[in-house]
Amino acid sequence: MIKALYLPKTLFFFCLLLSVSAVFAQQDEHCGTDRVLQQVIQKDPSAAIQIRQNRDAVRRYIDLNVSRDNSDTPITIPVVVHVIHSGQKIDSGANISDAQIHSQIDVLNRCFNKQDKDTVFGHTDFRSRIANVQFKFCLAMFNPLGDATTGITRDSFPPMSQSGFDNTVKPATQWDPTKYLNIWTDSVPGNVLGYTSPMLTPVNWDGVVIDYRYFGSKPANHFDSIYNSKPPVKNVFNLGKTAVHEVGHWLGLYHTFGQDSSDGSHIDGCFGLTQQDCDTAGDGMCDTPPQTGPYSGTPSLTANSCHETPTDEKDMWEDYMDYADDNQLSMFTPDQAAEMRAVLNTVRQSIQLSTAAGSCKLVVGLDEIANNLQANLFPNPTNGMVTLQYLQNNSQPLLLEVMDITGKVLLFKNLPVTTRNSYSLDMAGQPNGLYFVRLQSGFSEKTLKLSLVQ
Image 1 (cartoon, rainbow, N blue to C red):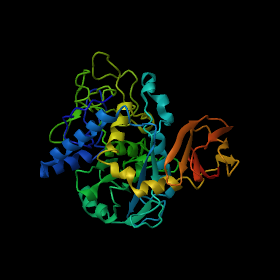
Image 2 (cartoon, helix red, strand yellow):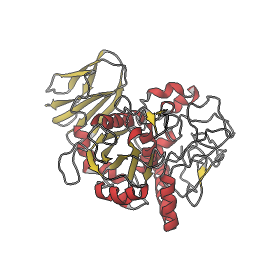
Image 3 (cartoon, rainbow, N blue to C red):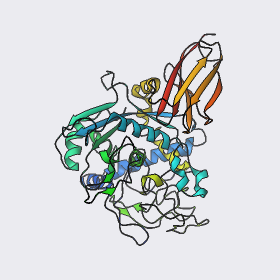
Image 4 (cartoon, rainbow, N blue to C red):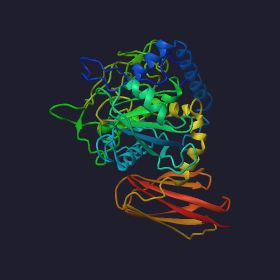
């Protein structure tokens, strides 16, 4: 696991400038966060000290709590999606549909809970290293004023630069970043897929920005061509992995390749090649093999750009923090999971403790999104033992979650993927009252109310 050592990097969150290499494909800049952070550091050099303090806090938590932190307990992250457009009708251009937004929330939940089917494209040797981060993302049900909401806002602004967006749109639309993960969708200038603004930037910048064409997953994301190219080029980033990558940055992760310098610029090359420095160089993760630069497209299973000791491994281009095509990305590692959970227990702890997260837990999934899942509880009310019968009409992984009336998660587990089955719940010992039993499979969700009377 990660040791509690100061990581000699100055960016708490960053993105790369993709470069030309004999090993890696030439690409345009796909992520703009590094430029934002470099500008912040150049304007205020003390920002580097703040980053260092954040990193130290995260690493101290890992060192003290890694053996005690219950990594099987889900952490809920309430999300608000701000759809920014220039006057189009809903489901036209940048004014994306609710279905596209829901598909992105589904992708986040699958990728952060070890349910990504795209693992078939990666290295078999790394499959045992796929981590279940146990994060649950849900659209907020109450806005900062306490009013009911869908967790989706829509606002019209004229086209503008990234700087204009950060200084105009974000402050005008952002919800309290200590309580919500703010995600904006819009047409991002240039060929940038998205970027993350971390806490060290102005607080009203905090959040993630994703180009609307790379947000959510097809078929809800129906943007088949990439950029504004002529002739059109196939969109290989329409499975929702850009948001997974950027949320990884928002939660403290670095790219798996190269490392960054003191001024915030990215340096390609092999770093962290030994057990002695793997947690203080590169991405600071000892279970992500070092690689010299980012991958694109469909990489080779034999690719190995760096040679570490004592065991030399292939490059882990299927990690979400790399840049291969969406269908090639499929995993976080245990060290990355520990880092993200530590961030939510330190510098972003207010997110999981907010009332927005509590209400989010209670009501997410009360509406069945698709007709692929049926469920029933009996007896209900119950005095202890209750049987859950479920009928599943797809082959997607099936998640079971049991919550009390306050939103506290009592049970969170995977159920067998079968067309018809049952599961016994033992509620004996729990206080009398109302409980929520939630099932999720792909785009299908169903939540049942359970009354316990002993």
